[in-house]
Length: 135
Image 1 (cartoon, helix red, strand yellow):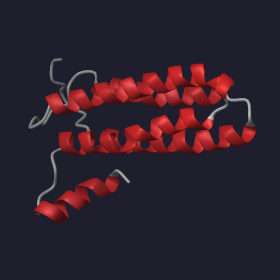
Image 2 (cartoon, rainbow, N blue to C red):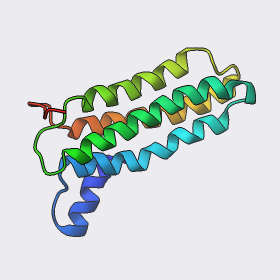
Image 3 (tube, one colour):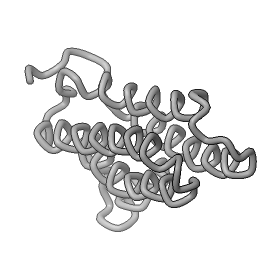
Image 4 (cartoon, helix red, strand yellow):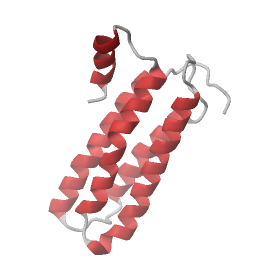
């Protein structure tokens, strides 16, 4: 999904978006997926799963703020990559921590979590890796 954003805007406005615009748009599109995870789990699993999902959503919100603050810059803000890596790590921890007991539910949650992780990895591909902006 994310990799098509640049092509969409290029076709729409005949120019490729800045990295920060692509990152912001990608986060806007992927963030709602995190909410679906909580809806999938059993009621007794919700508190622990909600905690992780809240961390994921906070990380995505922080990453969106980093990208917004860097709009027009060729450098990524310090902390953006670390924040996105933490989102991936939190989702990975959710899948391996044993909070979700039902195997079918875990399979569904894994599919959603892997979709989010894949989109975050695609977002990371467009983030400049050179010198970072000061926070």
